[in-house]
Amino acid sequence: MRVLPRINPLYEHIAADKVIIPNVFEKLATGGFSGYINHCASNFVFLGFFATGKLLGTVCTEDGRSKTGFEALSLLFDKVLAVGGKINVYQMNADLAVCTYAIALGTRIFSGEEVRKSDIQSVIARLKAQGANGVVRFYTPERSALVFYRNGLPIGYYYDGTGSVETSSDETRAIAALPGARFDIYSTRTREELSQYDLMQMVNLPKLWESARIRHETPRQDVPPETVPEPVFLQLVVPQSVAPRISEQKLLELVDDLAEIASAYLMREGRVIVQQRIAELGGGAQLCDTTRRALFVARVREDAVASNPDTRIDEMIELMESEMAGRLAE
Image 1 (cartoon, rainbow, N blue to C red):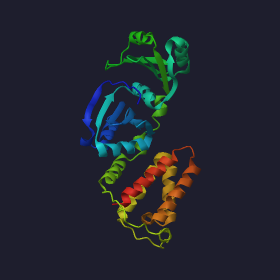
Image 2: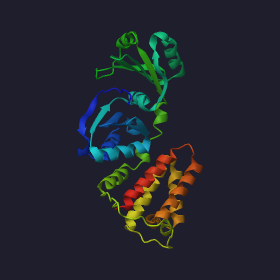
Image 3: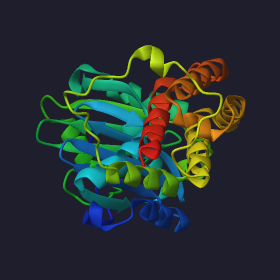
Image 4: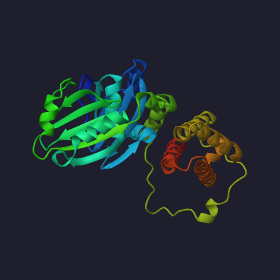
């Protein structure tokens, strides 16, 4: 993960398995929190960015692979329940929170450019003319400085190890002037634009947490090596009615969770797609049958591609399949 400012800690090194993570997010949201929450466990790092109580975005990285949005939250819950880890929360004003968001989820428009070989004054002038929002990072192997920009103007400076945002640029200039110093520039949209996207309103965190908890509490059923698989042609014989293996209430909750996942990726259209395909299938009880469940997934995938081919459909389908596997194994 990229280097972020560690300022104004609300919580540090809190054992993640001692708290209910959705409650932590809800407390930050209702308190109008601005800043970011961080979770670390072995090779896993999660970041969630808030501005005035709105969850602007999330990202997690594990073994060099990154996920964002709904999937990052799902992976966070799984990781906390599996191995625990530590929670840290750092507070700052909303404008600085947006700048920090840019480091992890914004666009990197310059990367590793050597200061002495660049016309840095022209670059800074361009940021001002464009009214850029984001961060300029100057660094060497030993030192690092962050300059936060809002509407093209610097609003603060952060240096490694200071623990606060400064108003003077003297140290930044000194670091930028060091032999071999390089710079990165990260940009993002305005706070007003980012605030239109609030994950706290799009994702039902308590349900997502409960689904993760059920997955981790469900005992694994290993198939004995000597077990002979049922012939494929028998699996294709679909009865006219499927007797549900779980209660009607649980099936309703499963369908609602599937709609929640779809809406996180496809907005309102995702929920409509799931509800229509479940109705066509004959109700949630049909998901207990392997063949009809596969048919449901295939049709939802087709609808998702037709609705928005640019969204992360494979991620959505993977989460839905995981949700069904966990719920139906109860």
